[in-house]
Image (cartoon, rainbow, N blue to C red):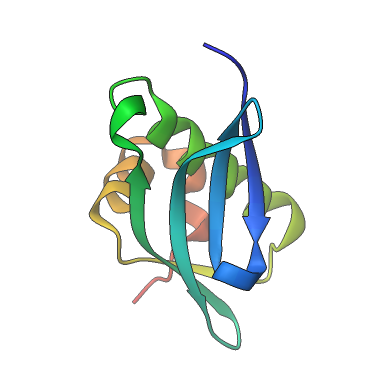
Length: 97
């Protein structure tokens, strides 16, 4: 499979997974004063089972660590929540509430 590129589509309030220029998945988000809530993850049906969702979540979380360390993560999306639970390196991003 080709490389998955993660881009922020701020106009749509979502991070997108792109493969060869095609959007194949996304994570919707809502921002607050000091938070970002990843609310929903979706992968296009023709690309399910290719690991797109996991690569997308990892890419978003790495980006938040690097570019937005002051934002606290709220993981409303069950897929994101489960991913963070399995990858302790991202747990410091979570809202402690």
